[in-house]
Figure 1 (cartoon, rainbow, N blue to C red):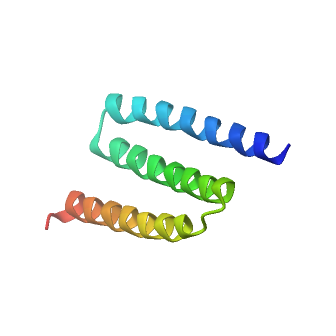
Figure 2: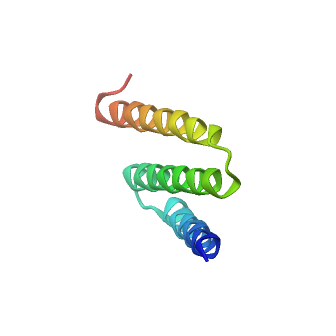
Figure 3: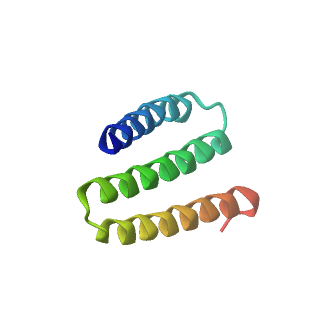
Length: 86
């Protein structure tokens, strides 16, 4: 039962990444695309953690943490560039 619930959570997360990709493609401004990219990163991190739990490979949680840090730094760089340039 728990595995089925986790599988449904993964499928909903993957569906939401598809919706976010539409926003990324159609976003009228750069900031809309940055927010969509950041949201897709957060959803990808949740999928990695869910798969780590399902596969009982908890090393993937470390991968999710590093991915989260890199995503955050990327958003900061884009925000700083957009605000006043590098």
